[in-house]
Length: 240
Image 1 (cartoon, one colour):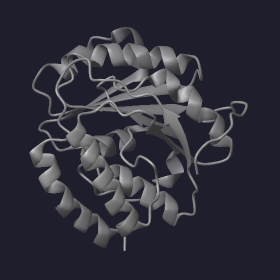
Image 2: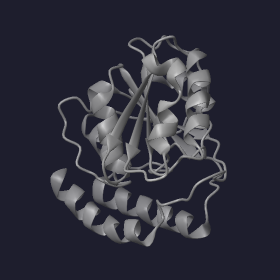
Image 3: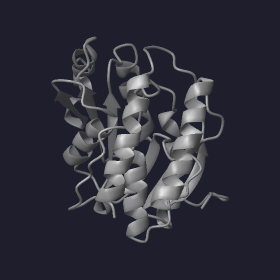
């Protein structure tokens, strides 16, 4: 359901683990970590940031590691090669210690401070998901996103305005003892399908979306799009 009204922020018992998957984001990673620290400090004193470097070759991991001032809050996980967006998120989820898991991309197309738009609704649902009020992506990515969302609705009976929006917070218990299998962006649909199966009605909240400032988009590449149908079939039979 779409959010229609704000509520008083609940206490975030158990804290927040922010998962930041990244691949070749050397131009963004330090800024996004600093932004994340500032945003999370305003909502809770109990948080951690988990950077998952998915086989970057541009020094992303090294730049993230330089932020030693907050090292006690910062975890860095590394894949020796590029395994995919979903694989990076799965690594981050496995490393999360807090009660709530929040994830977004490290490309700075989202404003992490807008987590304050999601938090009030945690009183009424164990999952709150963003949708891009005005998506700032090339036309081919927007078309791909619309087709993808249609297929997810048909195959998994998951209805969400923006399935792949990388701005979600959920209770860690949703994925406890569950084996997530998606290696790519289908991880978003898998999370929603899992939540639906457990009877969770998520809340949808509009969030801002900005043009990429540095680095190169890979989510709409031919390789990623060509792999998507096979991942859809695999997930369909896995979740039957």
